[in-house]
Length: 471
Image 1 (tube, rainbow, N blue to C red):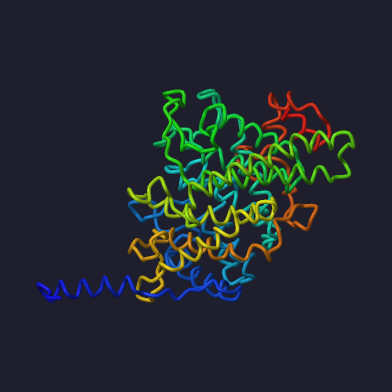
Image 2: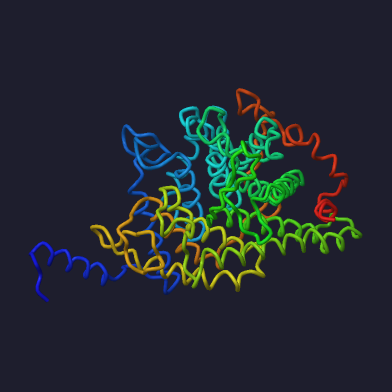
């Protein structure tokens, strides 16, 4: 072959070498998975500057134009590292996670720091709250006694989001995307904000045994169906503007919307199942529970998983179908990792889905590492896993997604998420309600959300509720 110029020849040779590059990573054994995960975690943290002098602990460079990343993505990263620690046993980054998650709790200890108000969404706050809840579920080392507990932080986030001032009558209810009314996006209600609330409600119900959290999960699910964001085929639209009464849908479907609801539904299933075994459940309520609450959430979980695997793991390899071929935004590069991690968790709390979920997750993880051949070290990860070739599209989200996919392969040998009855050591904060917040936002769940909704919940027994409400 004759090249028209030395530059053209060099370019073609570089492309050929890139296409033939071999990944340094392996998932052929548990030890290989741990080693690969360790390298991916280190590479991901090269985008973090908060541990350097003059920088703010806990956050990634940003938000734009100061850097590529919004505040929420750092919260998601600490959650990913909590999973990494639990699944691999590597505690290298635990002190960093502790420092960062405690530094960013905000003035009201509710993950609403004033300096991020200009871009603070309900989903942003919730990603930090979900990370704190995962710390409680996995028995991550507890903070010092003078700091808010992981459970306390998760409850505070949930309670601020369940507060009446977050729920108006537009579109029949539901959370808006943004929290401050002056923010761009305040007039938009979306699935991820409500999905995070649903997810936290389901997990808090299971962790604490408090049915009021499950009530809110049911309420949120019902609203998603009523407003049409969750369609009859179990696809989940991104959201809609309140000016149209949420009738003109943005029909983009993202993998993390499916996964956040699927994991939450699995926790509701597990909560119902544990109630059926509980000694506090009345004998005559158990058959009703198993015919309704248990079977209902089992069906919902399975339908979401079936839809998610078909839509976001075609041929067993993760693809962000809404944007991968047209151009994704920086936030969207993170979604595949959430999908892998949350689907992996489903296999522990709804084990009947393990045979369906685990094989494609492994196939997808193998494809993910195959294309991690870029950068000076020859292991930088791109975004398009389906091609098997490094695409040159690098960043923190791409690294975090591959880390999630690989580390989640250890799920079968990891301890399932705990509850306060099965080994969870994170407790509610003992200070009186409102002690963590200058505006008394940390009222009890009953004070905040009991009025109105609990009028339909008349059963005194925790477990009987799930069976009764689904009739």
